[in-house]
Image (tube, rainbow, N blue to C red):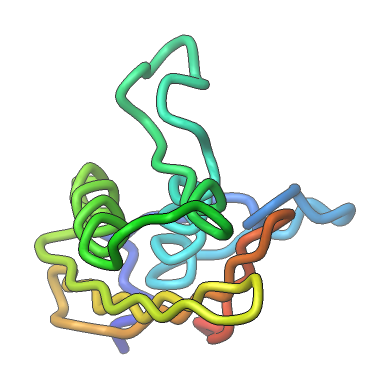
Length: 128
């Protein structure tokens, strides 16, 4: 099963913060959480990787074109070496934006849906 693919790796379970029990995730869930973290980190915020991050929260109430957010999201996801391709569709509404991100890893494509508000990026699909 693709979600259990050890080649994708493992990490602590964390989209916004590490959970208290320090549980670990692997496979596609680890990859999805890594991409979600990238999409809520301001570019240049990590001193050891100044090219890391594209904080989509900055676009919640800012006048912007949907294409700008979609392309920035795709480019940021592609910075993870496990991601072979990325395609984003963004919708705006009522102080929230939703991102449907189709990621392709070595096992093929899978979908990651994110709800984004001013405070956090929330994943809407669990990868088990």
